Image 1: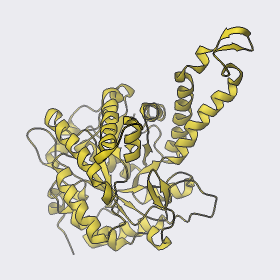
Image 2: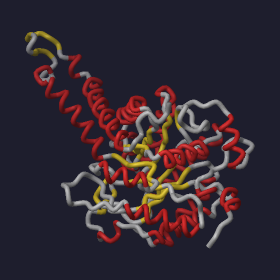
Image 3: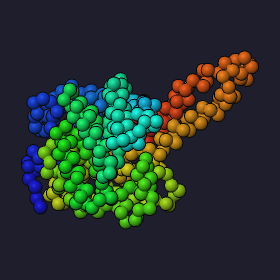
Image 4: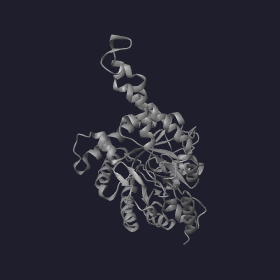
Length: 402
């Protein structure tokens, strides 16, 4: 099947070209011309990308640029303002974008674990509250920030519907969505049902300039309510034909913008060497397959994301980036880093944390400045930010702004 390059561009080139979210919607080509003519906020990034939350055409421009230049963005699961701030602090230090990712469980935790979660009310409210926090402070860090939500399986679609309603409300007031992108993980369903539902949501997302991340195959292991520890290993490897089918279907939606979480042996968590067999070559083969099917000059037409990235070798990460991976999820490693920072703080100040009064400096000396929660929480923030700077190095995402 051959598709005219002109038709491809006008229909949403490569499936990743949402039109401008301005009141008067212009074409993707016109938008690109306008933004390139504008003043750049970051010398090395497209002119459409500004400090703060990035959505719509600017997000597409950013991801395409990352693919072209050979780097990927850390996508970090957060559980509150401390981990959110760690993400943006790290991005400011390493000089690159960051993706702040909310899970259904993370949203519930932000709202408060004492709350009931009927109809996902706490999960929705917590994610919205966290997103609004990011919106208030992101530009102060002077980095591009992507607001994203993680795995949403079929049973959790009411959560996504609540987030979609929040996006619609925000769009009415601001001309852009609250979140930059959302993930649908319908990999437990048949390919046809998976992509059929994704296409329905893509049509809704496209009207609000929201990017869709979809999953094919299954990411193994367990993370935040998604348990695939007993999955058939054959399902850990996505086939090129499946990716192309999804690509074709979603590209039919006007203003579609999407990325693919294809499975190539990915597993959530950190495991002993030899327990996980990553095969990034699957992504390379898939890009070649799609490019040939489209008769496209673009040898990497799909934007891939890498789930289960914690504990992966730098070699596997780099090979995946070479295949068009533009984002890697990180959760397990950053959770450990945060805890390790708190643990080290307690060990260092142990003798000052055994009571409100009395320490090695004297029996009547107060300890308030040591047990102030901000002290240990800040230690966790700093350790998490340090770990994310290391992740950015592995992803070639250091000093990519200016």
